[in-house]
Length: 214
Image (cartoon, rainbow, N blue to C red; front, side, top):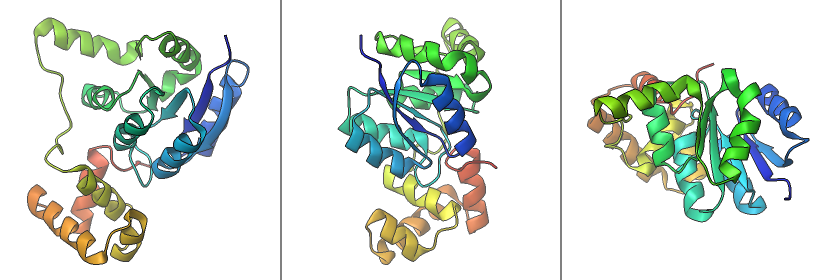
């Protein structure tokens, strides 16, 4: 069996270097990206077997990147490696098309196992969060979801870029929109979420995993 071709995604160079060293004897590492948009572009160019990604990534968060990836590369397996242990994030990741979910603090011992599992057609969830998911099934509770589902995919993109400090003109260029359209989206987001300042938008994006916390 040939080695799986893996594209790595994370916004920290040290993490990417660590993943590369961990996997290079088991996998063919075809590239690495430090933001969601670059990851999406590289995945379309390289068509890897597996993409690793984080929930919180610059320019395009992992959940939205995963949704776009599964549309253009439905057979590529997605493995989230993140600091977010909340079941809400796990639920959103699998709804977006994930095949695996593990935490950064356990990635050193689990990432190789996760890759093997998803290449065999299985799903992999780190034991560190699986217990909470199983408990919700036993008790009959619906898995929680993130609370920004009223926003469209485009609104989430605009919100993230506003929160990252980009100007309206820069956002318009990044998303291939007119500045007027970006302003419309921004004002509509603020109205929907009952937020009144860019600082409040930034806090909201951080809480909901659309912005990396440094």
